Image (cartoon, one colour):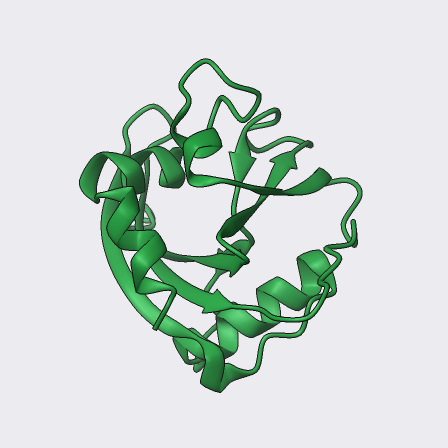
Length: 155
């Protein structure tokens, strides 16, 4: 008898910490995957894609904001095992500063309800408006000092 089970694969997710005038862009998720949680722009790394290409593509697809690849910096990576769903992600986090007067648009209305620029204090407020957070964001804040993440974006 032949074993036809497909081995589970580790998935690579990528999130983009986009900063503007000391604030971070967060979106409120809707749809089937973690609805009601707050997230940064991001998605899965496509085959053959660099981290910078993925970050720029996902940001544009989700917000209509254009991030030049040269403006993006690697910040950190996390190992995120989601036991309940049986999934395993390696989450890459990139950062970018954006100038001008950026307006994040709702490009995927079935996935994101709204985008907001929030302060570090608002992100850290466990009882505030920006809770609950999406699992990769929870893991990021658990593993890394937020002040250093904000500072990393200042390049």
